[in-house]
Length: 441
Image 1 (tube, rainbow, N blue to C red):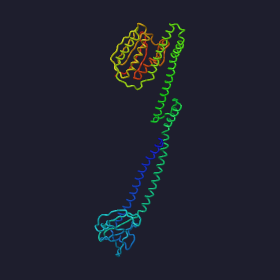
Image 2 (cartoon, rainbow, N blue to C red; image 1 turned 90 degrees about the horizontal axis):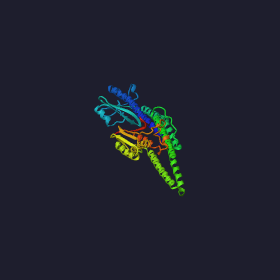
Image 3 (cartoon, rainbow, N blue to C red; image 1 turned 45 degrees about the vertical axis):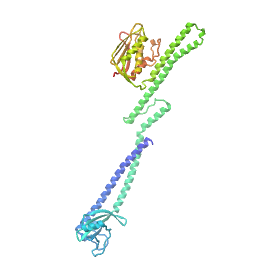
Image 4 (cartoon, one colour; image 1 turned 135 degrees about the vertical axis):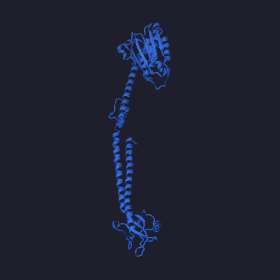
């Protein structure tokens, strides 16, 4: 069952319930009012007869009464519970029962009830009379009342059916208009699934929930489009970066196929080139996997960042023996993934060591959750400063050095995954200063 049909049925059912309750209330209120009028007339008639009972005794069979009550049928009982005319003949027309005879004999209070006589519906009042009489029975036909109530039932039935029909139609129109944005979203989603192109947008106007849904859908499409574009650029850049070492590897392998013609020194140089290119391939693939992994919803834990940085500094001293690394590390605890944080810290230190001249110093400090790595190299050119954290970006000066252009991109990826930031700037007195800011715990 579609949502539109469900909304239509709900609207129809709600209106049906409301109309049914209202109709029942109207019917019983009208029925009570009409019967109350009959009861008031009968009790008034009975009160008049109680004051003048002789006028109510007919001289023969047939209806009795007077004035405005001429339509009522009157039957008087004597104290013995019998119905007699003034001439002594039996005048019992209305059915007698024990309850009526009890009132005639005991003169108890009156009562009202419905009776059926010869398949006709009547309203009856039985009231006591002063001796020698016992009680009076007065009946009035309810045919007109029953007819009016029957008409009222038909009118309420048709009104209810009409109201339900109108409610169903209105529900269908309202649900159609209300769900129009949902249909647009569905159509857009189906087209995107068919074409794979997330550039389409849906119209989102107004301030209601469905407008917010449309806005959220457009935001999701924009994020999806950006993600796909980033993925395409990533694949293109990765393919481009992989092509160079692969081509070099292939060329060197082709040359080595004819190694019997090569001088031993040339063969050794080729083997050294192959080893270097294999290392570059390994580093490039490792960086690509690191970027492709993202945060991967990895479980985080408290990390003693100062100890992690100290371990990385020791590693950097071994990796760059001609560069001095000075570290001032304050005790710092952050929440994160230790392996990823260690990779980011190492990339910063490796970048500083790579750009530092022999005999220079790299200054490393950690305080208040901020790691500062300052080298005394050539610094960062103004044109390169905005791109140093982009994937595969390598400045003109860096193209002669080994590397894939992914190191600082990984630093930014790790920083953002941990809710932090990373920045690069020229240091006072020359060199570059890189800052990694993380939230402490």
